[in-house]
Length: 101
Image (cartoon, rainbow, N blue to C red; front, side):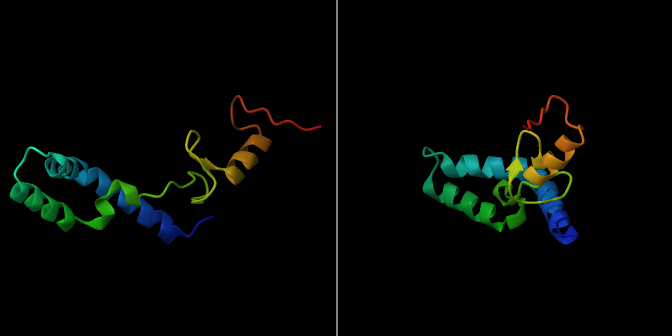
């Protein structure tokens, strides 16, 4: 299991990213629009940088749903390789056939 504090910190980042997603997108669109005046784009950039850092989607770390492990993460299953193996051995993942010979 991962540290509870790390998992909770990541959950807070997910929540903040959801709260600020629309605002960040609007400001980012202004910054990237070349047809807008330079002053307006610069003001939008300053407002964007004033937002909390943890509200950026890029700061969210993919973690295993079962253990919270941050590495060896399968996006499709939202599990780490270790949790996938354990659940697969117990037959709890539908359609997964574990080969052995």
